[in-house]
Image (cartoon, rainbow, N blue to C red):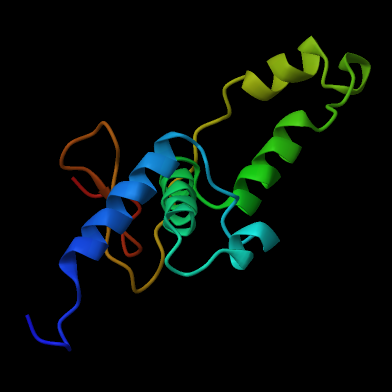
Length: 127
């Protein structure tokens, strides 16, 4: 091994120690002052980074998660302020069908439920 080559045993040992710290939850929160104070070769530093990466993989962005919690826990309007059953029934009532109208310069419109029939600008209906 040359002097320029990295010591692979040291990398393997760092990874093994970091995994032990990760599973033992023996590491500070990633990015905290305590984490920043750790030596760069401290396996707890890598364990904190692994933990943060795993949390990101599971839950995504922390701010987005907090925003979701805020939205889920916000107060809702009281029952008295909500729409009444009659208003909901009126909103659910079927609406009249849309009237098909041909537009000049556009192709004919096929009439739904009537195969082979179209509405055209030149003629109101063609067979």
